[in-house]
Length: 98
Image 1: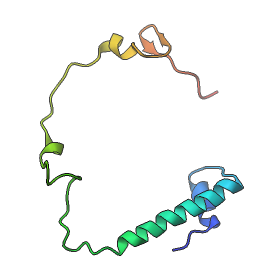
Image 2: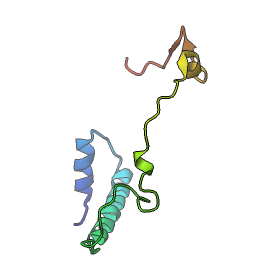
Image 3: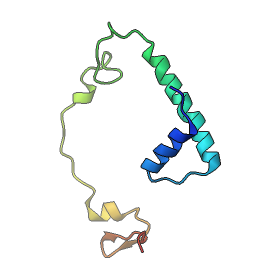
Image 4: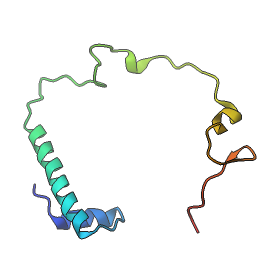
């Protein structure tokens, strides 16, 4: 499946992105490479490959299913300790919407 610059423009439009001409060319090449790689993966015979929950499941099958343990939280002071601009016990963040 060849990827065209029109495909990239359509994706950018759907994502509400404005791309320069250079970015369109770059992303066309990158997306074509990704699609080509996926097509290569689709050539693999995986019929006899059993499904797995995560990589390394055979070596450590219970790693992803450990018991949950309740631990004490940071607390307000701990959470604000590295905040760049704390204010009256809250995180103060720069205004991003005018």
